[in-house]
Amino acid sequence: MEQQHTSRRSFLTLAISTPVVIGALTACGSSGPGESASGEATIWILTGQPQEGIRTDSVDAFNEANPDTTLTLTGFQNDAFKTKIRTAIGAGEAPTIIWTWGGGGLKDYVNNEEVDDLTGWFDDHSDVKDKLFASAFGAATVDDKIYAVPCETVSPIVLFYNLRLFDQVGANPPETWDDLMDLVPVFNDAGVAPISLAGQSRWTNMMWLEFLYDRIGGPDVWDAIFNGESDAWSDPAALEASTKVQDLVKANGFINGFESITADSNADQALLYTDKAAMMLHGAWVYGSMKSDGDDFVSGGHLGYANFPEVEGGKGDPASSVGNPASYYALNASATDAEKEIAKNYFATGLNTDATAQAWIDTGGVPVINGVDEKFSGSDDADWLKFVYDVASQAPNFVQSWDQALSSSTAETLLNNIEQLFGLSITPEQFADNMNQTLDQ
Image 1 (cartoon, helix red, strand yellow):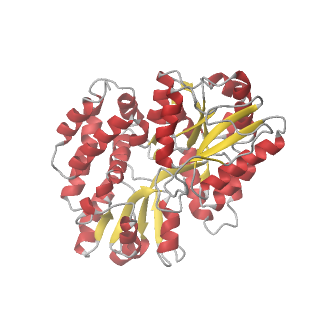
Image 2 (cartoon, rainbow, N blue to C red):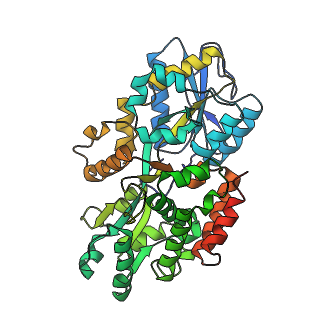
Image 3 (cartoon, rainbow, N blue to C red):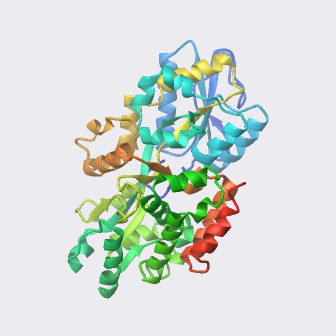
């Protein structure tokens, strides 16, 4: 994921509409998608620069270091990949290595016995596991077993704020939820929107609920939902979180007309860096676009950022985070033993390398590698990179974005109900009742 551009949690800057083999080929020629020649394994990736280039370089370097075997790479656009991978798995034509967002999609693979359990492999390769953020393994784990290798970058959700506006009203950034609520009338009285929100995109609203569920109820609330426990959405902490969201809406905490603002247009970011709004809750990936589009907003030191405020009396740890813990690679259960050995060798020696880590850093991303912060010195964005690194690596609980953690059908129901919750057309209790109906799906 490119944290510097408009994309949030998927790779939307895409270059091609049909699959293209972009990795090395064996002497006997290219096998078709999902097929492998002897000594050859396959991997499918998402296209779009700079991610495609980094992934391709990683595979090329692995092939050069392992001349007796070949890992053949094929690239797909985001939407094409989602369709192709499901069809290919069902037809027994999937690649050896399956790129995944983890969470609900990975859980489906596991339930259908389509990917291998890698727990034992990680036990035998503790150096690989220890190298990666512990918080990245949650979205790779199903029923206490690890089914995918975390890789690439981490993108926590961050509370951004405009220091110019805080100085203008003589206020400090909020450390607690009560602080945030107290700031709402202060900024409204100053003619400034307290919070920018691209409500039409729906997932942007979701981020507020994700944090409030965690801060109020701790990780057990979401765990119960994710595990499908009966009436989990009606947990008292969940109802309190939904109520607090509606309190914020009713207090005019969000900019007028937030329901018609979209995130893809970067309009919510522009409201922050043009001094129209004081705060914005958003993914770490927007930092780069605000830096490039906001004149001196970032370079001039006018952008502030922090983890989500504590909710006083809540059970959640204020150091916890939500967002994208990593990207993931799973191992096709139907692959041959020889193919799996090539894939596992790539997982161990070619995926999360020093060269790949530096390449992600150069794009403004923070790799999911412990100690990678040592590479930040000298970067103009060193303070920002270190902040993201510290939040992600030290988070006692890192909840994956709900619409990725849940199945696609449940996620759509969730987003529709969140839109209604923020629009005040349903109550917290109605929201919970509607979502409880999805728990057995």
